Image 1 (cartoon, rainbow, N blue to C red):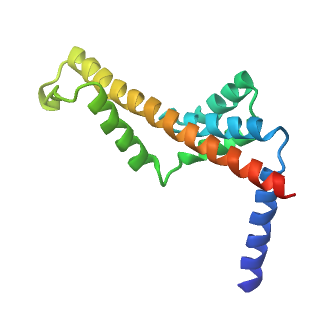
Image 2: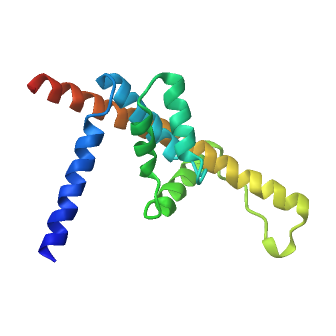
Length: 151
């Protein structure tokens, strides 16, 4: 058992070292990571990584760190992240509208409620994605700059 744990720790260290030594300047690596975090805040399951890599290519950031940044969204964080995003979107877009009683709903009302819920989730995801992407990218940038000056 102890050998398995030591092997796992060694693999994790190699992975972190590999991530740490990615190509690009500190700003390119931080930008890639930041757009990855931004993309990970959206509820586009399966498309977050593609979105992050696409944005990293557009903004000339590191694509691999963009993919890693999308890991902010995972099975353990889906519910709290998207609930918080929805609540924030509701505050921004006025939460006073009541949701229809689904036992007596028509097709038109269903589409209306879908847009009501989706628009709030997307607005909250946009705001949280911008905030966490900027903060995460800046933290990585300053960390990379600080550690590169010591070497």
